[in-house]
Amino acid sequence: MKRNLLLVVTLLWAFTACDSKSKESQTENGDTTAVTVAADNTKESAANNNTENNNNQTVVSTTGENKTESTKSTNENDNGPKASIKFEKMTHDFGEITEGTVAKYTFNFTNSGDVPLVIKSARGSCGCTVPDWPKEPIAPGKTGEIKVQFNSQGKPGTQAKTVTLTTNTAAGTEVLNIKAQVKAVAKVNGPVKK
Image (cartoon, rainbow, N blue to C red):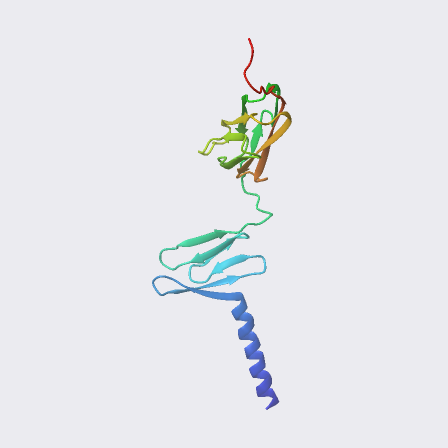
């Protein structure tokens, strides 16, 4: 009796251990493919005799078509190619300007990365700072421009504004800075005598 109980427990343990190492996936045509996942993330497909080492991918193999579906996970150790942006300068000082002036400056940059650079958005720190950026991807080694307008109307004194770019670079954001010393315009009440 004790032997039979021990045998049943051993068999249950063996089936449970095998089940955690082997998964079956059913294909579109009804065939099943056993996939074994080892401790080093090597996946073996018993039906196709394929072995793949995919630390950051989920693989589904199907019999017949050899269809492979991969899902890339976001991993800090993902060392794939990244876009990189390099500006000639990231800060511009307009110096002294008269209140009401719309000052303009163009920031020039190069995609110094290995993949196309995508600038998803550009946002000024206030409504007086308006950026214009390329909406299409910038190929590696190519250049582009971020045009910035600063409207100084109602902004006397020292002004410091930013433009935040959301990109596909490793950092994810880049910040451009503009400065100006805005000289207030004298306000006149009533008619001016000649």
